Image: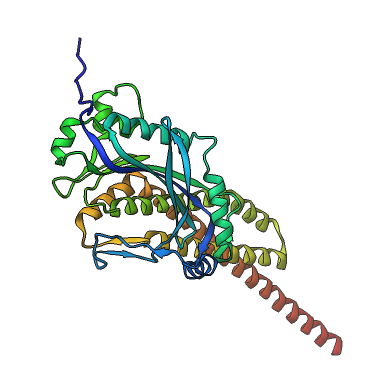
Length: 380
């Protein structure tokens, strides 16, 4: 019988400083005027939000299409793992209509098993299965504050969530190799109490990145473990951008899913119309589809250009891995396919409307010729 491979418990590793960041992202509008929102925040609170930039990365190495607006929010207290913790709260607005709210749970002087327990408690209290989480209330407060800067606010808000476990300092300095020899990150990343199979463990640990000898990034679909002794937040910021892109592409994918059957029904109705009414039906439907294609294309371009990583190879690798892991290219390809269907339908409708008008014009010309002939005969 195969014996299970022992894994280090990490009881002797103590996290001196870090945080558990629980993110919830919302689609709140078609677009957000960040410049106007910045003015609104300044006039309301005396000090506006700040535009995001990656602290440790040169500006020429990373380019934001339109830097998101960071807005600090009042903190809150949470009961987690048997203690009351003061948590910081912040909101990030993106110009393509996404809002990211993050609750930052502080971690101080915790042994590794206690960190794992705290992350599970945070996930239970604030994760997707939590029923008493403050997300809806926080989102509503922020949206009401930003309402004048929102274009076409969303009635139903699509959501994404993500969990980051960030360690800035251990009780003793550790290299990445030493850290992985003394802890088992799989329970932290999987959220499972039971031992995983070796193949499942390998899958959890597959997306592993390091640049310096003492930093580490481990990515999974719904959470990440980040060791950053220099206190930089660049990796966390990049992961948030990737999640925001996924959220908005999911929104447009679902929008087009709902639009295509309706479009087919309207095309069928237009084809059953007669005469001038048919041409008008086709022209009206073609204009509506053209407007929708233009709007979706404009917003998807903003989403694609939300962040361009050029010279920072390490950050580019993490960002690219996150996009692939979150299935952003797959959803983007689905949106492009559905847009292509709508574009082809628009072209066909435009040609149909032109053909119907041409037929009506030919009939009108023939009628006019017949009238002229009849009038000529009567006169003769």
